[in-house]
Image 1 (cartoon, rainbow, N blue to C red):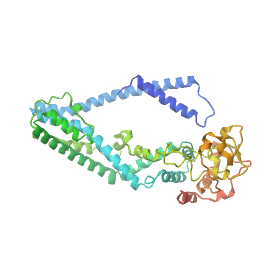
Image 2 (image 1 turned 90 degrees about the vertical axis):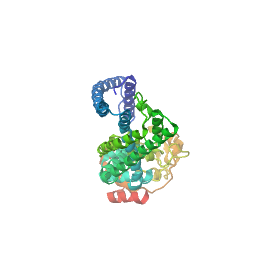
Image 3 (image 1 turned 120 degrees about the vertical axis):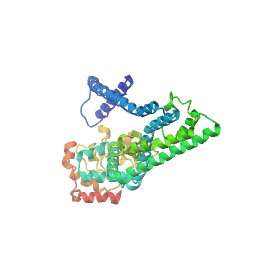
Image 4 (image 1 turned 180 degrees about the vertical axis):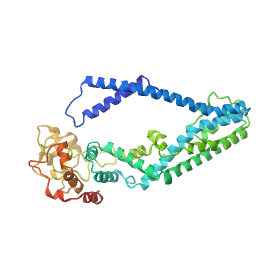
Length: 428
């Protein structure tokens, strides 16, 4: 629909946010103010042509769509059709887009409920989802994806959910998605005709006019359709007086509208026709991600509390090797948080400062360290032992080397990938 100055400001805000996020990552350089200005100008210059071209195509498409929409009504007018017939057909045309939106939205919610029941990775809590994510990572053995999971867990969760939903829709479209869409549009057609019948009776009892009929009709459908009297503002209907005929026009014309919408049901249009907030992946993301995402300052494990801003300490059943975060030691460490706090002589440097703090007294470091409850424990999830051994060279390249006083224990190297995956089922 074109753009104005507020859109440019929004674009600049988005660019600034992404640059800031990148700057806060694992980088050893800092962007100058001049770089940001040049980046914004470059992106806006490219975006200007893209948006302008799209706006031209948009206006052309709208013109063609509206021309076809009103052509049949104009034909009826030329052939001497009554005001009731023209008004009825116009209502049907105006209902087309709201019907389509309602069917896709209702189906998306039905599908979301189905996936939460039938999809193995999505039918439990976030801990269950986390387990399936770790299984998938092990199967793929993609180091970059592991780093994304470790450093940007929330982003990775969203990406995994999106892929799961896309796969489910593609695999189950003909046996689950399409039948739901057809059933939902059938029920909606019945509700529209019921609303027309009730409105006709209401007007006849109250000796009302077309305005009263339309008000009653839209109110009854308000929970189903985004459709109101305003959609027909400016349309002359003062001489519409045969409401039984109006109801018959809807009954005769509506099936063609329903058939036209149904003919375009397919896997490609399903995600495109939905508003972002109504997509199954967004609904599932909201369900799984409304919880705590604070990461352990040592190993990066995610707090498992189901409340985002919960009271009390953060905690997690199993911590990882602090080497996965690449911090706090001169060499990549294989120490696990829980075993480190059980030691009497190990220490760390909070936030790379010169202050030395014993692991067992980690809360004395203050800040984020004081908010965690790390129970002394010598057990380690075999999954992360396998991971460190499998991706040792990648970790050494990404961070530092596993050398010096810290070596990977030989016992860690005995685990196979299958044993690592099975340990997830056993402990998580």
